[in-house]
Length: 154
Image (cartoon, rainbow, N blue to C red; front, side, top):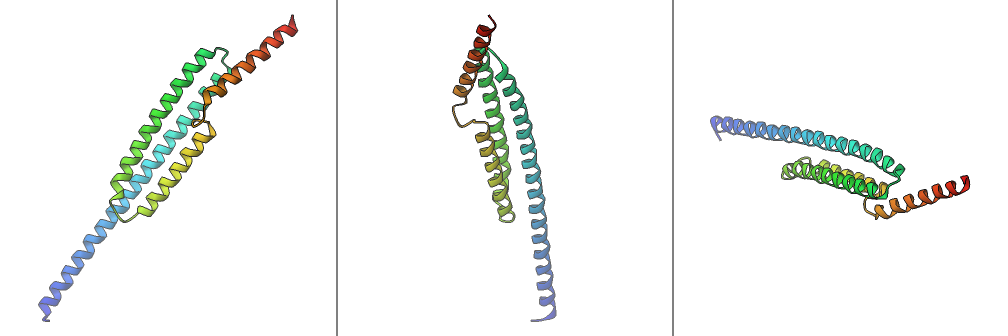
C-alpha cells in the first residue's frame, strides 16, 4: 500500500468519524428537546390536575345534583381532551425519536414514568371508576344531614 492510498484511507476514516459525531450530537439534541417537551406536558398535566382539584372541591360543596352532574361531565371531558392532546404530543415526540437507535432506553424510561404518573393520577382521582355514583352518594348524605339539622332546629 503506498502513502497516497494510506493518506486517502485516513482522510476517509476521519470523514466518517466526523459524520458519526455529527449524528450523535444531533441525536443528543433531539433527545434533550423531547425531554423538554415531556416536562412541558407533565407541567400541563399538573396544572390541569390542580384546576380539576379546585373545581371538584367546589362541586362537592354544591347542593344541586344536576349542576354537579353537568360540571363533572364537562370537567371530565376537558381533562380527557387535554389528556388525549398530551398523549398525542408525547406520541409525536416519541415517534420522531423512536427511529433513532441512540437514546431509546432513555425514551422508554420516560414513557414508563409518564404512563405510571398518569395511571396514579387516574387512580388517585377515580377517573377509571364510576366517580359519578360516588358524588351522588356524597350529595345525598349531605342533603340528609342538612334535613336532619333542619328537623332538629324545628
